Length: 272
Image 1 (cartoon, one colour):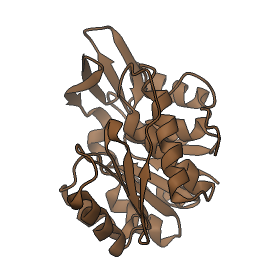
Image 2: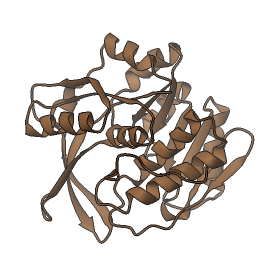
Image 3: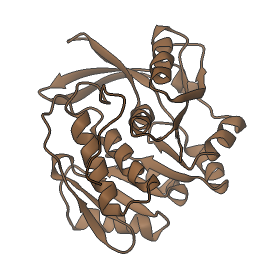
């Protein structure tokens, strides 16, 4: 089983505390999947600057397929970050070469050869999802906390696994929201509640996901790592409740480090 992660890549820069690292929604999910033993490809465009070279080197060292990580003429995207206690604070975003990112017919063909294609709200891949879906690949989409964003509706016909961040806990609204998405085409719709767990609906039942103890260092990457764990479970044909458990276990490990993925080569998921 293999995954293509198509969309954004950027550098998160914490100027005040002198830290930075390569990241991006699909990069973080992709690296964590690779660490879980799922061969993963990155389809994106990075810059021809020092940050872009760092991105290429880092993802190559992590073992990802970067044959479709193109180099654009311009700077790599940068997000300026800060910390509020243990929570990340997003500042200015300089889009760089991602402003004009395009996905070619070759990119589409390459993506569709994978068992599952993952993208995210700011990945700018929504226009190629219909063709990827038509060629048989399953698609997952990270909508973050933008439950009313236009892409929630526009991409619905093509998405098998949808992920939403909900800043409350389980309630009637989110239950109906998830049921609506599955009724109109998704296989499974998932809401994450931060330290309050998660909830999934597959058209038959609701499943509540656990939270595992963690010494929180930085919450950055929690959502992307949860998705990686969940998709690992999907690709291993695990039941939905086990997919939620996988997501929670990976997220607990990632929030215990400053970066959006753990520093070990392989993430540990036990007792499946």
